[in-house]
Image 1 (cartoon, helix red, strand yellow):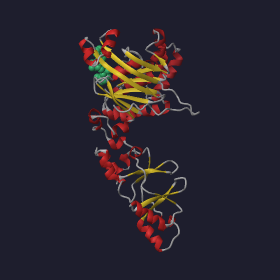
Image 2: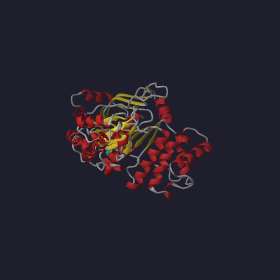
Image 3: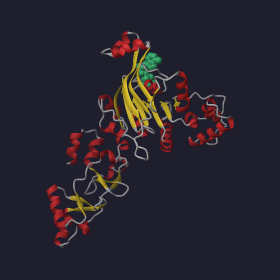
Image 4: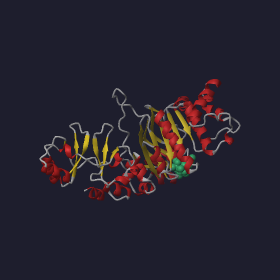
Length: 419
Ligand SMILES: Nc1ncnc2c1ncn2[C@@H]1O[C@H](COP(=O)(O)OP(=O)(O)OP(=O)(O)O)[C@@H](O)[C@H]1O
């Protein structure tokens, strides 16, 4: 298993570390056995077999994760891998057989039933694949349902519901009945119902899996937009790695009740932990998932702006390259110089490389996806060049790295391609 890699310790505006929103430690779930029998099975050398021998089923085993506040955390795996089991342990719809589950530091496996109800009502919203809307109530009333349960007055809850419907693109449709809407729109009502309550944590169990691909994509885009605005701690279950990539900050890949990899999507694509993960990765459109930042390599040669053409030529020779970047003292990119232009300058006895600066290179930002610039790679003397918002040079994406990454060649060959 790859390193658990909890989200980089997030900090608030004062630089204080912010504790994670949800922590799972050693979480296991055995179905069909008493707690005592389950714990006996979990203590065995082979818990899966022990659980089965006792007439139970090991749904999830020894799961560890930390979910940061505001993170979109995706749980992904094949059917039956234990995704829903893990999700439902977070609000104890599934009672964990072992382990701790902390929400804002409080272990909810130990709280009273009343406290659990409070946490479920106030802190955790849930969206399912089938939203089970009330067919005889209007879209607005359906969206307001969670607020009704919380005792919010009618006028207030209908107003909040309208705002939520607006946010999911259903403004003006509040008076309709659910069966007057398409499948995709009904899912939007379900989402509006969850948003109306505004829970700090949202659990989503395959919410888009029943939708046609195009509508599904729209819903993913909508979720990404909403998430950019709300930064709500969200746990999203899916069996589709492309969906996981599109929406997730990090992805936890599950197989047979265990975690096989937990990492940001691009890292999973670049370094799948095993053959099971590789199988998922082979279906991913890497060019749309990987960004310049994921393929970033150090620039081979960076020269200061006050270097003489003669010294610059010598450095090119020493480094066996035909071109180099020229930057200011604070790393801002001024341009590139090539050996032929430098030779020209030395002949003219020029003192500075500034006259030789060219701009025949392609600049991208770290977040630009490879698919948007890969056609430009290799057309220029220097590789695709990555800069930050202040035009500071971050590095390059060599053509060989792009080609080898997109064609799943391993890292060693990438280095050869880079050289
Ligand atoms: N209540 C239950 N009793 C017995 N076994 C169960 C129960 N719920 C789930 N399981 C089993 O536990 C395993 C994990 O189920 P889970 O629903 O978590 O998988 P999943 O990855 O979410 O799959 P899917 O995408 O099909 O929902 C499955 O083999 C399932 O049959």
